[in-house]
Length: 138
Picture (cartoon, one colour):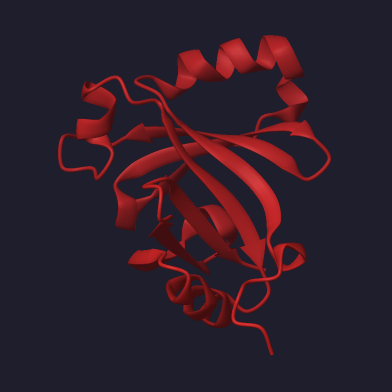
């Protein structure tokens, strides 16, 4: 068995974008993609953020992420005008994928259960190039 992850096991789900005001961002994206393609706003308490998803095509989304207060993990990124946040993939076996990615020098940051995905497990990792990736349990 190869230790390298099989790219077919990573199913693109979304790109996360940081926003200062989720409601005003929703209005902008609703003009582009329609109100029916915007999810409700969800509080992800463990991450201290509010999120919503903009459907841009079948199974592909933009996640709008607004920090809840200065203690949010993304607050300082937004203050530095870093708005492209992460890329996310759904995977069937999240633990197996983390192990395989760590072998090729991905660095696991944290694991949590997200209200945005009906309590499913998520994990953030840094790629060897320093990009942030989120894995979401299918």
